[in-house]
View (cartoon, rainbow, N blue to C red):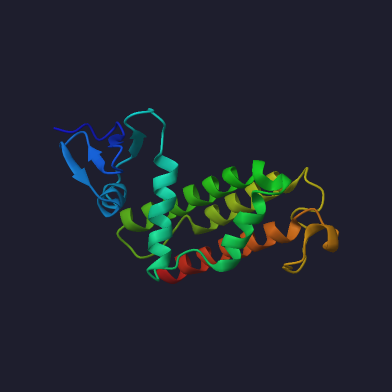
Amino acid sequence: MADDTKPLLIKRYASRRLYNTETSDYVTLDDIAGFIRDGREVQIVDLKSGDDLTRQYLLQIIAEHESRGENMLPVNVLNDLVRSYTTQATSVVPQFLQASFDMLKEGQEKMMGGGAMKLPGLEAMQAQQEAFLKAMTGGLGNWGAGGTTSTEPEEEKGGEGGEDLDDIKKQLSELQSKLNKLS
């Protein structure tokens, strides 16, 4: 019997085929996506070098879903992610995204586990979100100050990236609205 607490080890062979070490068979990216949807963590390593390729393959799974029209990431969020790789925001974006997804998962679990289609912890989740944003933006100059979204380069707009954070806030707000509609 497989131990669901340990990541499922997938080995990539030189032929680029992916091998499930628990079931001793080859798997596809769709299979891996299915394991993840079922709640299983996966780790994909190159057989020869031992390099961890998990991130690369997870990004590939996301890209394939997006290319099939299963658009979950709006273009402005994708633009903001690309921008974050070239700005000082790089250090806070991963924590921000992780905290946002944690709050979303917590909300979904409460909604599914409560039986009723009402989300009693919604106000608390919103308060946590606001507190997180305040804590995150506290020491970063203009971050979090209002403003309109602009596609101008940072040198031309004179800001410190506050517009990028505003876009992320907008996306969180849209996710929150979708949660509200579900409840």
